[in-house]
Length: 236
Length: 203
Image (cartoon, rainbow over all chains, first blue to last red; front, top):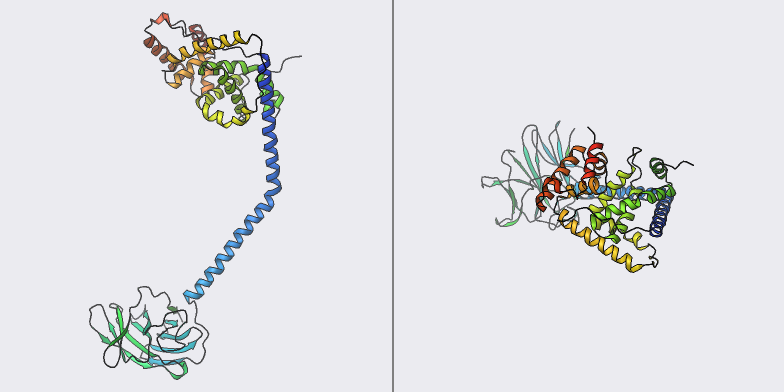
């Protein structure tokens, strides 16, 4: 029969016990000393470290804000740039008008619904027309903007085309084509580009605008973006 | 001069008195060492685990103990150290390396024989007991081998006293079945301890 009575452990002599005790006390003192010195270190460095971290955080926030503002200025076109010259009406109807003027960002166009709202955009870089848009953007044959009015439910597309464009056709969703009006830019705007204006039903906005020459050849096409992010709405 | 009791020493230790904690070690180290030896069957490992137990106890000294619970508390820490002995030893490996080398002893051969014999016997027992679930091994070792009351065993293991009773009952049943013994033949597992601890148990 197996005896499950456990044996007494090998004796732990007084000498070994004392050695273990001394070792324990020594280790605890060492531990406490290290802990208190690390606490002192942290207390000494806590304030400068905190200040440094806070400084870095504020710096990061500042840099982020500057970058964001810069981004906004570059891409957001937050406000109408300073006009360089008079604002001239290009075309108008009973309840709308399109005007144009020069600015540091190139040609500005605005569509205004009197006593309602207006849309403004500056910079329509077109081929062969100096000062029509920003030098950073690639010039095209046709560049424009879309404006859907919230009130009387009318829509407009306006923009610039290069001087060799004879006419601009709008293509609604039903694939038909509709001619738009093109105008010589006012002399005050000082650009060789022509201005096109198209009015449409907001229920079926054009999906493309094609620029054609005298012989009906397509020189370029502009597809309005789904989001009209660079149009600034101005409420009276 | 009246001897300072465990509770007072633990309170001093709680306040950061290392010498008071050293005194606690002197009082309880042999009991913890015996427990560690009976759980491992290795006296050198048991010595190291005893040191680790007290280092760990220092780390956890902020607990507010009842006056008679210092020793069960130490047994509880030792049990945790045994459960995670490899991790615990790794944690305190640097401290254990700083132990001074053992001094040469007289009658070395006799000591070695005694130690080897104790280890062999203990390992034979552990081969059998080791087949029990861990919770039952712990209850058996604390309540029967170390003679803790069921209440203190429950405190050490952080379990209800009724669970201690249940585990003891199951451990004994399993051992009887494993060894093919009759009810009255398991006297070797210190049944006198069992009777004593049952008497100490809370109603």
